[in-house]
Figure (cartoon, chains in turn yellow, blue):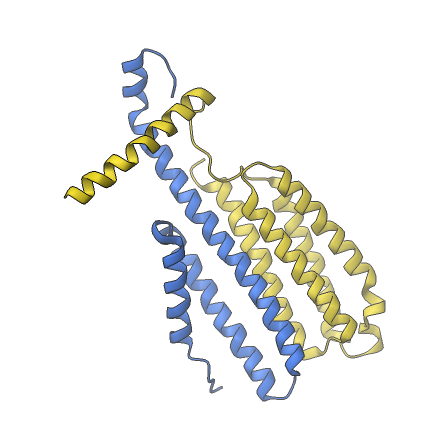
Length: 152
Length: 111
C-alpha cells in the first residue's frame, strides 16, 4: 500500500509535465509515433513488387549465366537508391525513428543479398531470401498502417 | 521432417524476451509477435533442412540467417511501435476523460 502510494506520488510530476506540455503546445492529443505517411506505404508496396519480380526471375535462372550478378546490377542500383530515398524521407518526419531504422535494416539486407549474389545465388536459396524480405516489407507496412488505424 | 530445432522452446524464449523488453506494451504486440516468431522458427528449420540436404554451404547458411536476423529486428521495431501506439491511445483516452473538467475548472480551453 505504501509502495503503491509512493509510486503514484512519483507519477504526479510526469502527469503535470504532460498537461503543461499539452497546454503550452495548444495540443489536443499526444503523439508518440509519427503520423501515417502514404508515400512510405506506397513506396514500400512498390519495392516489394520489384523484389518479387526479381526473385521470380531468379527462381528460373539462379545458377545459370542469365542469373549472374552482372545481369542484375540494374536491379540493385535501382532498389538501393529507392531505399536510400525512403530512409532520408522517413528520417525527416518527426517521431519516425522506428520506421527509419526499419528501412535502414531493409537496406542492409538488400546489401547482403547483393554481396551474396556476387559470390553466387543458387536455386535453394531463393525461397528463404523471399521469406526474409517479405518479413521486412510486412513489418514496415504493419507499423505504417497501424499509425493510420490506431484511433487517430 | 524431423528437426533438431525445438519450436516450443524457441517460441517460449523469444516470447519471454520480447515480453520482458516491452513490459506493459507487450499485450498490444502479443498476437503479431506470436505469428512472426512462428515464422522465424519455420525459417530456421528451412535452413536446417537445406543444410541436411547439402543444398547450401555454411557461408550460405550464415547469409540466410543474417537476412532472417535483420527481418526479425524489423519485426521487433514494429512491436515497439505497436506498443507505443497503445500507450499513445491510453494517454489520449485519459486526457479525453478529463478534458471538460480541466477546461471548465480553468475557464480556458487549454486541452
